[in-house]
Length: 420
Length: 165
Image (cartoon, rainbow over all chains, first blue to last red):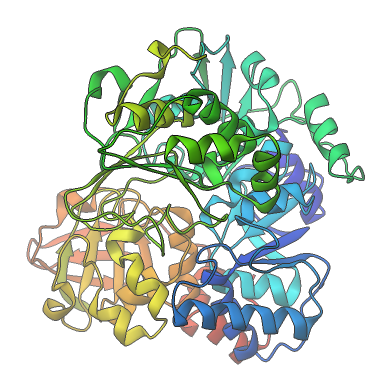
């Protein structure tokens, strides 16, 4: 069996499972944000439930619109806050306490290797980075989880993505995933898992692994997964959570297909409006003028991303024609960035830095685009109207490409940039 | 069930089905219905008659996990969404809120926008009355059929005091 099959077997109390089978699995951890959680709470009351199945296994995080940008958002926060209090759910992350849910779930060790984790947010697939099976569900499914702690899953077919080679300077895991999106297309892994393997993945940090697992949903995937290794163990140790079992794919595990990739010659890529698989070389679209550059989100708002950005921005200023918005993914990352002097570099370059939130990524309450405006963003979706006006355009790229492009005010290949 | 087919292409995403600005503001089905498919066909909800169908290509409903997308489709009167394939979270959400969804390979070729079609959920076929052509659909697991029949997961639970799987 492969790792995903092993995890689902363990969680559903079976010796083995086959792709396509429906299983009912015990959930190790369930997460909701305020956009989806308020509906779960409403349905929880509607079905007449009184107590959640396990208050220690539920995590509630305010992240989409924080601090509240409208009365409506404030009402959703209030519903979440009251439910957490009433049910005795300790893992409630209010404004100023956590940040973007997927980052918080990892930092606060709510997720462990080998776990089955569901979140009422499509980017829940991020936690495959440490070898968990994690996937996004809707608010109603979450009601079943809150009530019983169990949920049905179809065991997915899994594509093995074998990656070898070394990244060139300023070419990063985001570029690798955009390459995968170009190959598979936006529905190429529909209902499937992606297991990332090979020397490049072994050399990749947990931050980088989170970026590639995060974007699995953008090719239709159910979950991404990376086999736990010494980097995973070190990460878990630093998070003071070392009680877990590791599930590894058997050497003869079966896969739907294998994708062999090398990153040796990989060049910076950009996903052009308005589909994630509309991927081109940055050099092919170089020169496109930018009104806004956004660096952040559950895809690319981590400390490693911010370090690359600071390295590029140091001693430079953002182009007059462009505004640069930077959002650290969590309170912890914000504080680390502050202590390392990154925030100072950002501010001196003319960037604006806001508190951790999803707000700018999905056209929520900040960083909205006007009609005709063009934005280069390190986020995960460039759908029509995603970041504001339906007449605006969004390009997706890496933090390195974003930082260099913010300086020039145009889409620019970072590999030609000379850093200090 | 008989009605008009409203045809869309591949990869119709949740931001197109219901733009975010309405998702955040409302969970009221009537409000959501007014803006259904606004990202691709403004005024769609005014044209739809109760019982009509959406016929679409691959990966229908890709993107966000928010349930406002299937709720808006159901609330504007669409009785069934028929697509070559669905994004998995949308598929689960639709069934959970009681919107029938059918996987029907080749449906884009067999149905034109404006055709009158008939759908039999229990027997599992789509009949294109305008073209006199019957198209088979992929059978769903029984527990999902039961859930749709009951009007969704919450309704099922209220009726049977348990979940259907």
